[in-house]
Image 1 (tube, one colour):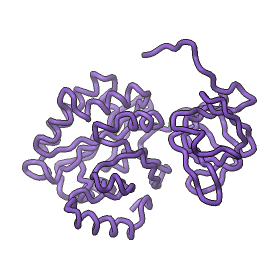
Image 2 (cartoon, rainbow, N blue to C red; image 1 turned 90 degrees about the horizontal axis):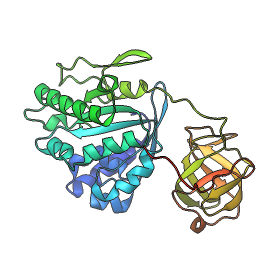
Image 3 (cartoon, rainbow, N blue to C red; image 1 turned 180 degrees about the vertical axis):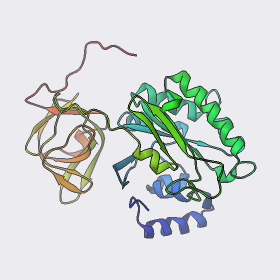
Image 4 (cartoon, rainbow, N blue to C red; image 1 turned 180 degrees about the horizontal axis):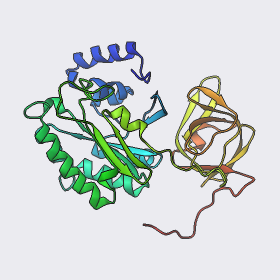
Length: 314
C-alpha cells in the first residue's frame, strides 16, 4: 500500500507461496525476493526496499531472522537510523526468540551496540496467539521485552510497542478492529511526548539523526552490482561528508582510486548525496571483482580512509 511493492508482484508471490505450502509467509515472502531465498523460506540478503509514508522515504534494510545470517545483519544494521524489532506472539515462538541464545535478544543487542539508538517493537502474529489477539499475551511480551531492552541500554519509555499481524495487516497502516483493547502507543523522550496507533505511525515518529556533512566522506559499501549498459555500481549509505558526481574517490583498504560518474537514489540522479542517503553510484574503469562489501569509499583529496593502528571499543 505504501508503494514499496506493486500489487502484481504480491499476487504472483502469493500464488507461488501457496503452491509451495508457505501460505502463511505472505508478506515476508514478498521481501524474500531472491530465488535461492524463496526456496529456503528465509530472508537472506539485506534487501533494500523503499516506501513512502506521509512524512518520510523509508528504506528497509531487511535484517534476517535466521542464525546463519548474523554477519549480514551486522552490515545492514550498522546502516540504520532506527531498528524495528519484530517479536512473534505465537505460543512458544516468543519464548524461543527471547531465550538465552534466541534471535530476538541477539538482534536487539546488535542494534544497540552498532549505534542504532531508536527502536520500535512490533509484536507480530497476534492472530496466532492463544486466544487470537490476546491482550494478556501482548502485555506479557511487552513486559518481558521492555525489561530485556532496558538491560541492553534502551529506554523502554521511548520505545513504541505495537501489536500487529503482518499477515492480516492489523495495526500496520490502520487501527485494527480485532484489538479494541489496544488504545495506541505513547512514547516519551527529551523532544516531548508522541502517540499513535499503528506501526506506520511509529515510523513517522522516528527522529532524523543529525547528519555530519562537514566531515570527510565515508561511505561503507553494502553491495556492488554490475548493471548492463551502465557498469559497476557500488551501493551503500553515506555516513559522513558529501558524495558528488565528478569526485575522485578512494576505496579502503585496497587503495583503489576512481572517478564517480553518477549518483542515484530512489531511481533519481542526484547532484550530491548527504549523510543518511542510501545511494548507488557508478564508477569508471573498475570491475565488480575489485570491490567488496565492507570496503569504504572516501574523497581522494580530503582525508581518504586509512587503516587505524588502534581504536577504542565500547
